[in-house]
Image 1 (cartoon, rainbow, N blue to C red):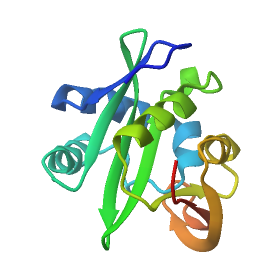
Image 2 (cartoon, rainbow, N blue to C red; image 1 turned 45 degrees about the vertical axis):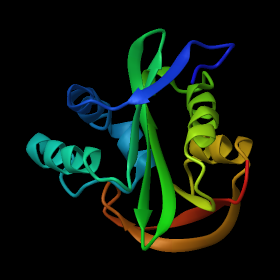
Image 3 (tube, helix red, strand yellow; image 1 turned 60 degrees about the horizontal axis):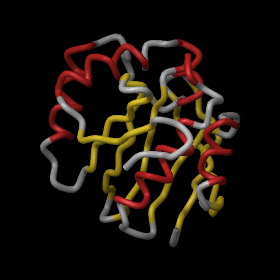
Image 4 (cartoon, rainbow, N blue to C red; image 1 turned 180 degrees about the vertical axis):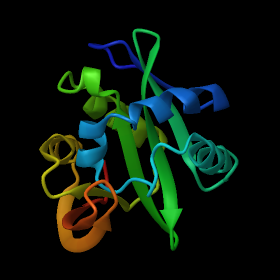
Length: 163
């Protein structure tokens, strides 16, 4: 579960990691690009309750991404109406270093359910590149309400059928 070029590792998420993830999602620029965040992203108790429940859900694969042994993000497979979907979040301070791409490649070798979907805001070009580098293709566009922007925006739906 490591990448040869960068010291990126995936491990099962522990409750202590959730406190770090909560801090990552408080960054305004990161939340804006993620777009589809909780209505009140500053409510730590709601965040911790939701994510603690996800840790015990057998349909969810919740992993922590480390870079040089430091927690730098998360990657999660969850299911909606029996369809697998992924989401990931990298500490904004480390964007552009290939961490998300390497973590997603590693994650997709562990999480083999296909097809698997990813959703991304129309203007989140970094996340779009990550999905495309990992073999995902755009299959649809939808308009949905983005809490971070307080309006409906276009969201691209990506699909991966195999690796």
